[in-house]
Length: 322
Image (cartoon, rainbow, N blue to C red; front, side, top):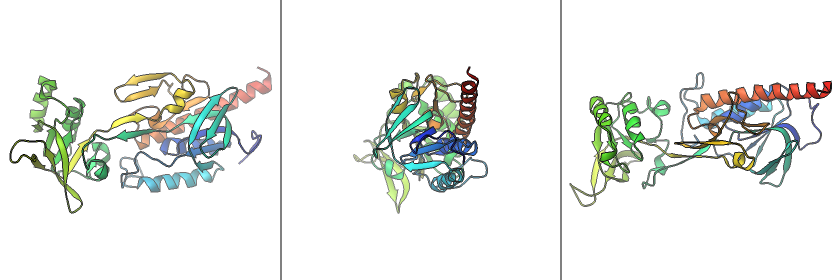
């Protein structure tokens, strides 16, 4: 790797915050473009609870841990530095100054935020312990593996209706547990679609899971027959939509313009991933809620290529006195 732009060991052309699919993809492109690049990764991938990831062409079924290990090895081949640390502060003047939790301070001409988001699950006892196993959130990620099984959908908002309808593509035995949604919030169209799809609507709150021999066998709803302890509904899979919490502190700190969505606040970006702050980029789930692994990698690639072009043109203009 050519360090023609390096001034010292803590000066980089690009710092990438987050070592998931988006961050590593950006770093891979930048490393291959001979850019001095640092990836700072806290080691908290969103999909860590899942044993496998699906829907990524040529990597379908690979474990998330193996996928990231391969990505780190690939970027290292091109001289990209990777440190296990957390960014605690960043400021921008002519360049970005980035402070790590371990005490190191680094500088970068461009900064990529690929910190993703975290999932906050509904506070149902036992739910978090089984998340990524038989408590799922995305049928595109897990529907094939859970096909034709007795399935429940836990509604924490009216969007639970949409999730239940989608799940019927993979199972015809689907029950929608209204949980935090009152029946009067379902529209006539909701009820007609649910009936047409064969979805059973179950009112009342889910109070816990039933687990037998380390596998989900049912959920319990509060009160009513057959006992005061509640009613047990047999099933083997439960979809639960977590509340998405974007890890956008760094973007906020640097003054990036954000937009509110039903899934949290995300930066306003152009088609390449550039935020409203010059030199500040967002990729993966830091840029939007719906980025699956393959989409996140694509976002990172696009940002990496755009950053290389930005740096090249800036240097040429400086040399030409423009």
